[in-house]
Image (cartoon, rainbow, N blue to C red; front, side):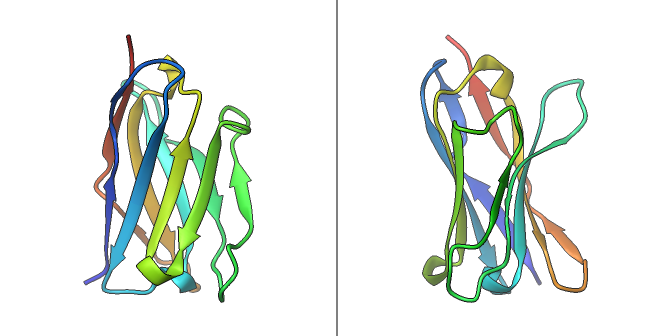
Length: 120
C-alpha cells in the first residue's frame, strides 16, 4: 500500500531551525505533487508549501505568505523523499505538520503527521 512517513519534528526555540522529511514507500514520489500542511490546536489545517511532480528537476514550488522567506521545500528523487527546511521559527509555527502526495488522477495520500513545537 502507499504510505508517507513524516519525521524531523520536535521542540525548538524561537529563531531556531528544523528539517522535516516525508519519505514514501510503495510508490515513487517523482510522479506526485507533494504538499506540506500544518494544524495548530483549535485551528483548521492550512497549506504551508508544495512542490510539483518532477521528471528529474526539482519542480515548481509554492509557499504560504506566512512562511515565505523562512521555509524551503525540496525533493530528493534518489531517496524518494521530500524535505521542508524551516528556519527562523516562530511560536505561531507550532502545530502538527502533515505531508500529502497527490497523483495525476487526483487521489491523495496523507502521512500521519509530526509535531513541531516552537517555545522557550
